[in-house]
Image 1: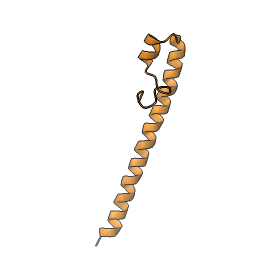
Image 2: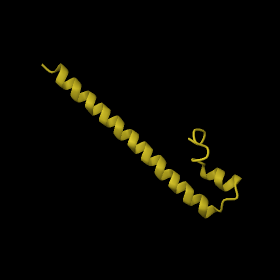
Image 3: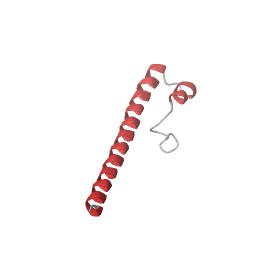
Image 4: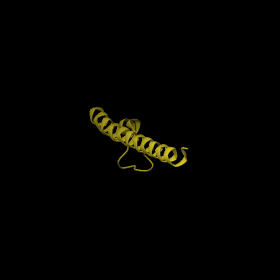
Length: 65
């Protein structure tokens, strides 16, 4: 994800090892990033489940006898 958005998503290791960002600030940024990443994953999973449920409902109504 860092390669896709290098200015937005910075690994904790990189912030601590290769910058002069204080550790407490790096942890604060990392927690914020993880909330955003986890929200995105949850949103994607929800959309996938909704699509599967919609397809199943459509198939059931279309092919039931």
